[in-house]
Image (cartoon, rainbow, N blue to C red):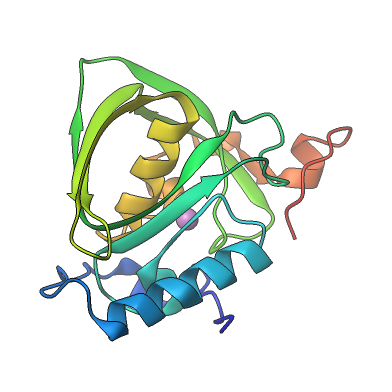
Length: 176
Ligand code: NI
């Protein structure tokens, strides 16, 4: 079922989500099915459970091609429960970022260039990956939602926040 996506200003987006205590449940499976359907319908690169009002530590992301980030390299579709991020090295990268909860806008956000992430798939199988580039960026963005952090809060210069169609008038970037 496609669920409404909460938008910035909703206090639920500012809360810290709780760890999932039981894996492999029908409840978790149904939540992930709704998240996937909602993300695809919105052309999203990722989605966190609190964005549909469920304050649990569950995120999804991934795409072969994404209309919101047409230049991004593919990221494998991933469902991750109770994720934990560990940056690798001090290097930060700044790039444009958007959010389905902040529709129509993009901003320059610094993120760790490389990181390791661990967690569990919905059946309880352990996930352990080292990533960089857009994959690293999208994981950091989605996991921030679990701590009530939206990308503008991470920006160092709010002059670099703007409307997608003004920032990229000639590009074929979807952001409704
Ligand atoms: Ni987001």
